[in-house]
Amino acid sequence: MKHSKYSFILTVILLLFTVCSNDTPGDMNPNPNPDPSNDMIKAPEIYKASTEGYSCFRIPAIVQTKNRTLLAFAEGRKRNCRDEGDIDLVLRRSTDNGETWSDLVMVWDDADNTCGNPSPIVDMETGRIHLLMTWNLGEDNIGAINAGTSKDTRRVFYSWSDDDGLTWVKPKEITSSVKNPAWGWYATGPCHGIILTKEPYKGRIVVPCDYIEVGPGRKQYSHVIYSDDKGETWKIGGTSVGGNESTVAELSDGRLMLNMRNSSPYRTFAFSSDGGETWTASRQDYALPDPTCQASILNTLINDKHFLFFSNAASASRINMTIKKSSDNGATWPYSYIINSGPSAYSDIVMVSENEIGILYEKGNNNPYEKISFEKINVQKIK
Image (cartoon, rainbow, N blue to C red; front, side):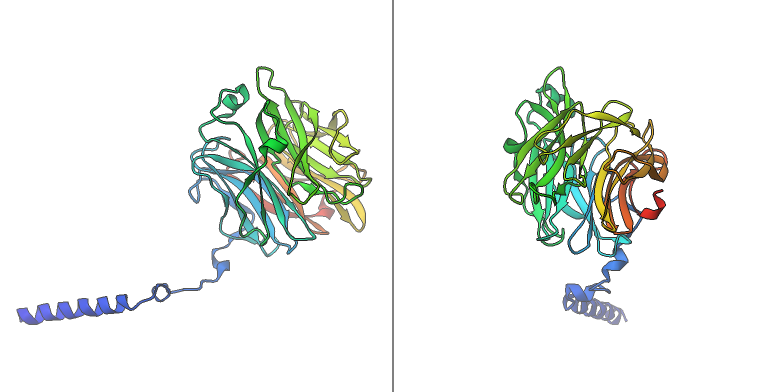
């Protein structure tokens, strides 16, 4: 009996071993080719704090590709929600007009360093997605960089994707072309850039940026960088004193408008008639209250009529995410729609169809940095 018992156990073990050793990885998976839609993230909350190995997600930017895929960029902040440290640049893709979103696509991960401030631009002729970004050593903080005492400095990089945002080429440093050595902290965007459509600057890529001077004064400036050869080379455009994070739009007459965060309770703006190479003196826009926060401006045609849309936390504090509309090149903003009356901060906007605008923005219940949400609004509601 004892011998039979052990023989039976040995036989079972051998059978199990044989079955397992003949399994392929696909055979061991009960669903070797799962439907990707089963794992898709559903809108509106497409990034959430304390998920996927990140403490929080911040700094949204969004574009729609030539193939009508939506690309929602964000900074994945590993250890905390600060602007420095171990930060990766990530994105999610949506091929169904923003209803569902893919798993994270890693755009740039450089060990413990800071990779962020996405500013994407889509070339609708070639399909290429251009992407401007910034980098710094993870151990360097903003204060040290602006004081000139950091180990390294803030650097600027350029990448692109030719496969609808699935993969990205290794970032190429362009700091020497677009940043003065006397500048400390520097940000591309963070929001979409534009490609100009009117002569004589048609085809020029323009990216809104900002910087802070190194030294005790630490003056702030908004500016743009641009490329006239589809991203091969980059140049510094004009600057606007006193601005900070900025966003740019092409007006119906071909001028550019730079809309800027600053230390006042209202947005400021400036115009360029030479493709962003110089800017007029900035002025406050009292129709656009702002809590000193990032915002986004978007130019588009609807039924062959030119409109500007603008999104920000339209309040004295970071609440009340609102989209406004102008039909007169930003001279007035009589139309508005409140997206979220609660905590809200950074945002970016994109046309998903002629009748719908999409907004990717930071929101939460207790603070604005709990989630990044994507929502679509019929433009008829902005009235």
